[in-house]
Length: 99
Length: 493
Image (cartoon, rainbow over all chains, first blue to last red; front, side, top):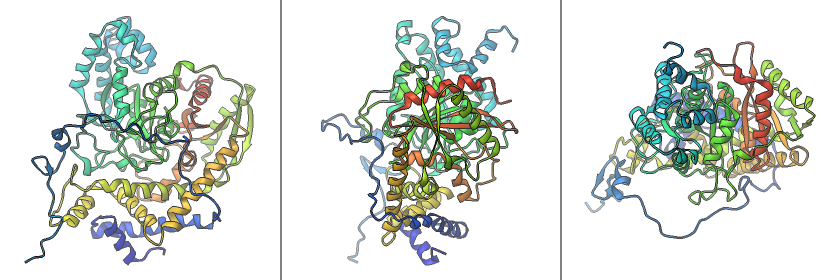
């Protein structure tokens, strides 16, 4: 067992995933088993090995810093679950603690 | 439909190569509208059995076909894929066409822009027939993780087409479209191409722009072309490859030119002994070995090589890919697009939306990735995996000092039966044991069919190349395709 039930619950919170009890019954042992499986990597002595940083090509292309047209606000907002004018609407972020 | 009727002729165009189709259109033997109709007719006849598509564009595709028909011949000759129908995996953004990643969380999402590959396809004259089914967010090897439907393998409807690009490969194998696009992170083009008996390329990392590809694991994701034949795959690749300044990992080198594919030079070909060990199906081994024997008979030097860190590939991949996925999928917060559930406060909104919008495999992977990146575990898991990735990459670098191309099976087994592995994630992950290592190293690889098992299922072999050496892969693949005459086999549907 690599993962305690408590750690699993904490993971679901960190990952922002509300799970049903049925899902927890399936996922807890599976995630635990996968963690045990991938732990095999610890048997490799890689102390002096540089972590991999970038695939095949040798340089990144940051691109030129030049202005170009953006998408229209309506096009961007069309998929919003809720909107008000040109704003995305969501629950209050900062709670009112004055009362 | 009676033989001799023009419709009959068109129905048979399904099995023709793109160059032939273009010549037929230019000569006036068929119109583009007729070609698109024949593709739609084939889809109508097959889709209930196969389940390759999530979205179809009947009216729009026919309308676009008319525009192609109205172009002067000169304009069509300047296009690489004039009027050719194509299926697009549903994780590639298509302006104005629903793009769901086969997830409930993106149901109804209409991208306001095109991915770079879609822009290039439009410039090439290709016509998007529809969006293809896939494993949710490209996480899976069987397409069973789609939130919307199952896709069946045209060679045996009880079996999986592979995944995650299973809709794209099944659509080509069933003759619904001649070409399609998939995406490949751990083997999601190569593995389903092998299962469905079609050609699929996973290009060098950076060779095709990722702009507009909905991200799963950004350091490995690549869009890949799928086709019935090697030359069609190369032609599609030439239409979409090349530098794109909107993708900062795009490689600034010459686009691939399919007209520069030469006849096969004598090569040094490496056979990794780790790819022929325990777990390899005997029929798969036999067919791949048969292809190697043909190459040897042609005077190529066949050399056994070692890729000693192969056995750590799956662990390395699942740590890195899922760590990246847990970060990439944080964007699905229900604020700007996608499903919205709950909403007492922001935390409630995130938890409920993501809890009900993602499927089990996606949740499993996000949880593993979150674990690998969390305080106290980061170095032991994610850090260790990045160091192991360096070793895996060095294995290939060492081998490529001695050989030009590496050959081996694409998958350890042929297509498995639907439902067989879906509840056992670790056994599903083992499917990708031969496709993952070269992906971790950013290398190009093409999977082509090389024979049939005793159960009449296609066997795929993969050719892995040096960075940006797709040309050589296509040359070798084209030679093998002719030598093995696989195109004479068709699924019996």
